Length: 384
Image (cartoon, rainbow, N blue to C red; front, side, top):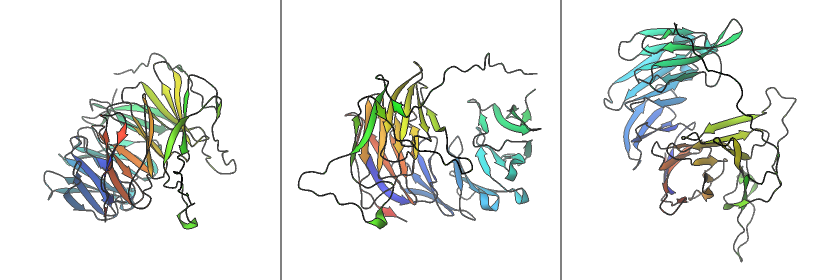
């Protein structure tokens, strides 16, 4: 990977535009739009308060900034920088905001999930959808943008309702048949792996060269990971994975599958069991069997598939980024002064680069695939 400059941001808000030309990031109340290749600043917008969420429209022409604390949404235009839109939910409050697929409607979820308000940027009309269920991802659209599926909570029961996006009315004369709701298979995540068909990659620290002494970091600098280099080793069976006993005395203990994601070709599934927080499981969906396990030295913070190929990027809160593909996996140190702790990441739509996000900064890394899965690095500059 070729690593670019380091830039200031806040709250891990950094997103590529759908067309891959731009990269938007937030610094408190400022929205910065850069060229995705050169990182040159193209536009700078100022919001009324700190930005908690940003999202591109599907055509990459508009950017939505949600200010949840003030119940506001501000929309900015790339083609007409002087134009902007402000949506105020007032006393109803705001907990979520997103674009519709046409990029001309905004769906705001009010506090306590009382309703979803649909605002039109073209006609300035307003529509309301009642009873949205309070859940992480309770709303999704069809690929053609014609229909909206919404998780609802009515009369103490859960429903999935289908709405027509042209008028935001509930879809009726229609019966949806899934043929069967029977379970296809169940994937177990045992603490001990003894299946010889599973490849277990264990992250291990590289030994320092002879003549060099590796000193532990000072107490003040102790964190989730040091900046020492690491590599993957293929473990021999059986392999006992590091487990974490859930805190039974606490409310909502972290148990079970905490994260999962399908590859873009739907051939692979990546999962993380919260009871085994250092491991990522890779499943072969065509054969419905486990394919590989990546056991990291520290807890897996985030992982995401590349948009074009089955490449999985992983971060653990340290100064490394990890890549898995069917050809193997690699651990790469993020260069530069100090520890750049990668807390989250996102892919460019082309799949050729990644944005790595720390608490206050981000940098771009570019994949060079001519000689396999390799990363080359460039200069890093701190920019506030």
